[in-house]
Amino acid sequence: MKLAIIKETTAGESRVAATPNTVKKMVAAGLSVIVEKGAGVSASILDDHYSDAGATLAKDAAAALKNADIVMKVQRPLRGKGDGGADELAMMKKGAILISALNPAGDADGVKAYAKQGVTAVAMELMPRITRAQSMDILSSQANLAGYKAVLDAAHDYGRAFPMMMTAAGTVAPARVFVMGAGVAGLQAIATAKRLGAIVSATDVRMAAKEQVESLGGKFVMVEDDETAAAETAGGYAKEMSDAYKAKQAALIAETIPKQDIIITTALIPGRPAPRLVTAEMVKSMKPGSVIMDMAAPQGGNVEGCVPGETVDVGGVKILGPLNLPSRLAADTSELYAKNLLTFLQLILSEEGTINWDWEDDIIKATVLTHDGKIVHEGYQ
Image (cartoon, helix red, strand yellow):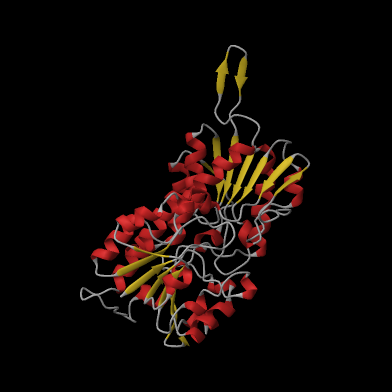
């Protein structure tokens, strides 16, 4: 079987869906791996690295995708004029398997297009939060490094030092960092800010996060009541809370924010716009020189006044709205992402080198959107 890796052409995307390490394993499994020239350059992987690992180089995406049985990508395939680029989906043959992040909740037309094209589309961001799927969880692997990068970027824009420094000329006070949302990205942000010497506090609607935050040396800030006991879904994600709870939590946050120098917001609800956590009034309450890093900017942002893809100055407070933090650490995030995809491929690839779909497997049921020209995922029919 032929497996294709093409260069990502979505604006701002530097990652690649395979690395020399994963290519070696795919070749060893009997696959013929075709990589478009230049696919890994932005992630510090040269063409020679792929060819040395056993891949064949293709001159362009069309050549790589021609007759490919399996296609691995980072971003969903472009669909022509509307995407401002080539129609990558049209280049895929009927029956091909597409393994990628596909954002089905935000791209219903795409789900229909995959079925029409006859491809089996696997949306890796729908991976269930179960133990045996952890090594395939692209959201966790990418969020971990994104949380780290968020703190570094916020520190870059913050005009002061992070740790306390005692010098003959005086004492520099430590920065105060407040992390909103203690999922994978938030916990890494807490750990990174602590390593840099900041005083860190954090909040989350899930009581389970309290122990995790405190284990990293952070102070937990949260309204604790009966509703918080059921604030987490079976899949490990935060539920949307009632308006009454939101009001109580907002009051507590409003008291906490003016004392902070840096805020990192990470709250996302799958398939929904990012919840509003920081109001314009809260932004105005912060000291000039403070920084807010809104990691939820791609889904509209947690902060009122955030402009996705831009840095906004509000009365001396900077609101950062990055669109693709994982891409800013492309070498490492590509390595982890490629391993996630490889592990999924190994799940469906038999020892004989054929594809084996176990439609009773929770992982398959959760991630496969389309198959044999039909939308098979119950959540998107």
